[in-house]
View (cartoon, rainbow, N blue to C red):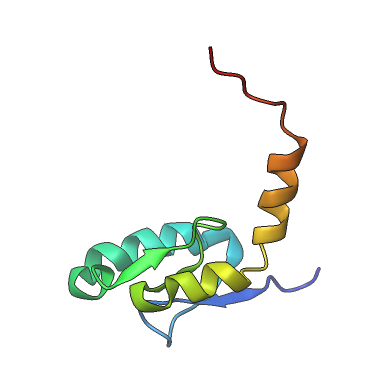
Length: 82
């Protein structure tokens, strides 16, 4: 069995978390670090991507999940408003 990939916590770079527990860990660290959490934002393409607010626009422009979301949008049926 392969070891699970580890992700680095944006709130504490010393935390290395398995991907299966990463979202839970983010919520926990966000509550424990409210001052730092106010300076961070989640990527609109992947909520596990938490970056400083100042770098959010740059991150979203280059996010690896961006192309996946755009493909899903193009496959969805047209929305018609009356």
